[in-house]
Image 1 (tube, rainbow over the protein chains, first blue to last red):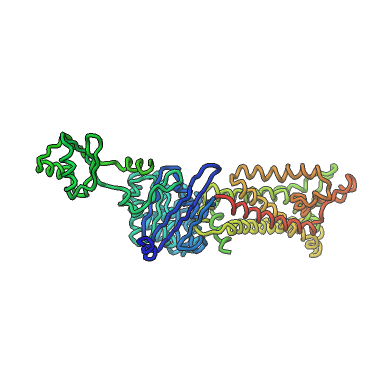
Image 2: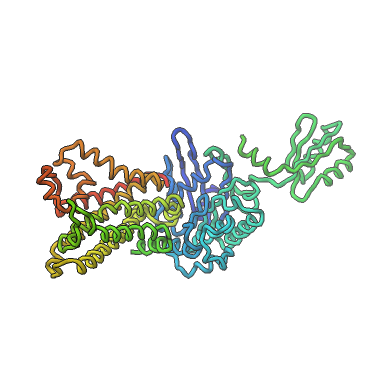
Length: 305
Length: 256
């Protein structure tokens, strides 16, 4: 019931049904089902070759699906739906011999967008003063930013970004992420493909994890990526410890692992709190190790199973 | 027409485009300028070349060799869209695949219009200077070779479009285009009787600009059966349609 109610209240921007793409015997995308809600920042997370770009290519009408369907705003893809979506697939694609401005003019023609927006967009991505430089003279970061300007040229409701920070230096990465968040704050829906869990965690509200073309898991980022600390404790007598852990409200979960107990705490609590409460109950721990599961480790676990 | 305007935006600042076009123009002028000194049977052709109205036939016959150059130019323009991945981006942004083919055929029409007008100017310039008879009837009686040339140029360039959309890599597409037009078809012609192969694309297109003095040559070597320019426009226009349709289908059914 919950989900049907939700679909009435929240408009679905992109719906993917059993989408598949085969290259010979290789299944690049395998019966994928996804729903992107309006206003979300939807991350497509997966290692290289997991089918992210192929999926985006199919819903953007440049790769023919082998099977399945998709719809934008509840209808089939058309010129009208394309004009509501701004997208970058893989690398920024421009005419190298044309200036930034000229390139955007060509794109504005295609999108039936007003040329008046060009200066505004160039300013927004910080290329206002470089509008007459040819594209081939741009650094990778500038190329990525020009691609963002191009994608936003006709003020689309949805932005599709494929690895937008790929190949950028830390400053460039920070700039692009900041830009994405600023755009999202205007209420736009963003679909973002990335192989970086860190990026998805920092930017996205929802995430779908892909592995070899299959959906591993999807949902709100908070449910899938946990920021909590993990603790490993041991004591001479484990039974009283287990009894106490059940009563401590800030312990979210715990499990015995051989002679150790692995547990996670709520946000805001740390090993210090646990140690104090144990000691207050007369329990002396023989070992207390706080280990923060790295995002890389979580990511590897996500795509392993 | 918006499509053509967008194509102009891409082409106007493109140096490669202007270089190939300049080569075309220079070669035509050069050949026309030096053709008066060509010797036939020890006798210089002299001003013979520039006499109205046969001038138009000679001019379009010479120009037809350079369709290859125009074809290469078109291949460069189309394959660029693949190597820069800009065609992909344009389809993402809303261009339909039919429009993608249409926009390039507008470029072809533009180029053919340019080269035909250029031949007109060239013919009038040399003709008015060197021709003995510059009466209106002499100038215009055989000027229909120019529209035939126009159809031929369009057809050559649409074949180039097809090769470019099919092969996508400029070098390979150019080689395939030249090998097909200059090698594959002539070999097929060689193995088929004239009354069949005269309808083949290259032969039908070449019939639009027949070789000057062919009637004379035919008396010596036996008649070569080929279509008259007027009749050849029909298969030529059908081929233009076919090449464009195939280009569209290639684009429609392949990933970008």
